[in-house]
Image (cartoon, rainbow, N blue to C red; front, side, top):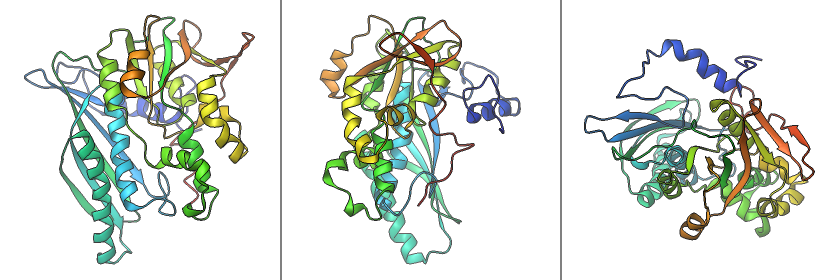
Length: 349
């Protein structure tokens, strides 16, 4: 398989490793970490820290106009960048936006669509209080939205990285991973979105309107018992493998979580799927996956933000990889899954 090295957690990870010799990067006081985290860090002259992240949102790869409006597309494109800032524990500062529109569309439709995309941007910008400060518009083969987001943190603020886990740290997750994947399954199983029953609408909402955990990320970065974090964009099975690899440890996942199981059972039945398949291998969740010591207490965070925070496993000094342990203590290696940009098919629009 291209770029798939035996020691790498995914093909995408191996690709990034392969291009590092061509980046001209050397660790410095200005740029303290190399590529590979949720965002880059730039330390300014006054020691303020900038977190810089970029993401692409491509038609029929990341979204389909069959079931999303242009306004919804704009919001989600911005939200997925905000999620990277959340994983670092940084506040949003400003965004640069590049939009590529289908060259076959007439100008009037292009103008109307771009205005609606910007309405979606503004929903996120207004909520998290940051501006769009520039960008570019160009014609191309399809709709593509590229966003570069700047986050900020004071000189004394600790930014979270994917590395930093300790032996026996707990692995925690915010929200309900699997709901977004369930929502995508529901959308793809109906010819028209208006046909979707109300009883599964919450899963559709989770997929179309993710809520980046900016406030929780900031709070976690201020808690010394939290040692590492990343957002779940490609599914727990893949992102946990990445976190295990980065920390040179293994991760043992619990085979069952009553809270998460109950959140997914209805969708699993509706889609004729195993709820664990949705939980472990669903992508586009944009929840936070983080490692914390045994004295981490999620209750103040749950009370303040109203978002569940669930322990789903532990880091351990075992061979790198992700394992699942059942109630009898039987441990098996979790099969590879989640989204892999080097191998996954595009959306069936």
